Image (cartoon, rainbow, N blue to C red):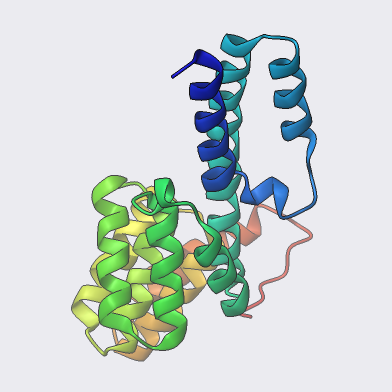
Amino acid sequence: MSYKKIFLLLACFSIFFCGQSFASLGDKTHEYIMETMIGSGLYKSAIEYSHTFTNHSDNIMKMNLKSAALSLDKPLIERILSSAPVSLMNSNEYFFAEGVKYYLDGNYSQSIGAFSICIDKDPLDVYSWYYMAKDYELRNDYNSANYAYQKALSIEPNNIGILKSYAKFLELAGLTDQYNIVIKHIRHIYSRGSNLEISWN
């Protein structure tokens, strides 16, 4: 098989599996660049470009997965998950999006499983700890929820959104001493910004 044919096979494979994040938006620039390189006989450069495009496309898709998951927009999450290439189905971002989808479905056991995989891959993934805490909270497993909240806050101790959620959980769980400590910390954070007003939404 000629070098040109090998390249064409690689290029087609690359476009099919990782081009969706661009091609679905009508961006054909990458195809034009590769066609131009092939037409000029620059096969090696074209292969290098296709590899660069693959990596860039995967990074874009990872950002799409994470952003969709954090938006809590279930139809968007499902759409992004269904368009993810096979190469990303073992990524932290893919499992995180799956975990959020299961969380929104009320499938808390599967959600915890997905977030556990994320944490195995990246123990500092603060939002996997956070949503795992929410899963446990909704299952009334307060000990596990408390632990997961504490892990999230050990990574981002001043994350006001997580702190507020944790305070509500502690109040619900009747953990008064911890609740008072968290409330004090929240008030301290707000006191550092004179224009900030505490909102519990």
